[in-house]
Amino acid sequence: MKPKSFTRAKQAAKVFLQNAPSDLYVGIVTFASQVKVAQQPSLDRAESTKIIDSLTLTLQTRLYDGVKQAVATAGTGGQQSIVLLTDGADTTNTPLASVT
Image 1 (cartoon, rainbow, N blue to C red):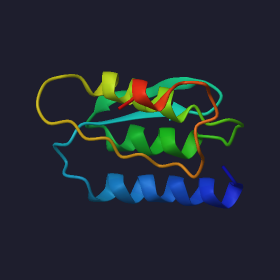
Image 2 (image 1 turned 30 degrees about the vertical axis):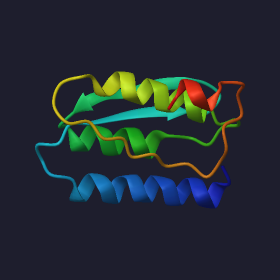
Image 3 (image 1 turned 180 degrees about the horizontal axis):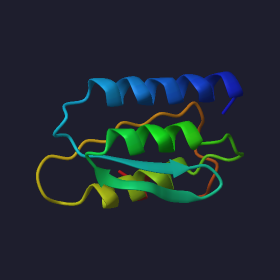
Image 4 (image 1 turned 90 degrees about the horizontal axis):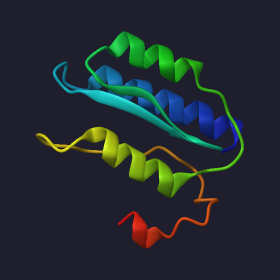
């Protein structure tokens, strides 16, 4: 991701947090050179914002692996949605069919 795009993605994530209903659980999964659950689903918007602010730009985009982790992290109870912010194509050998 280019630095300008990365900054915009972080800004978009914070706008989402500011406008999301207060009872909506939000988790954060990053997927650059490795996939990481940065925050389990939580109502703590201050912590979510802190995590987003701390993210740094790195190489690679493990997009498909990140989506798989986000789905797993969302759990199975209630309604689940994933908001995906990226400007890159997947850089792994993970087949798209394994994600869809």
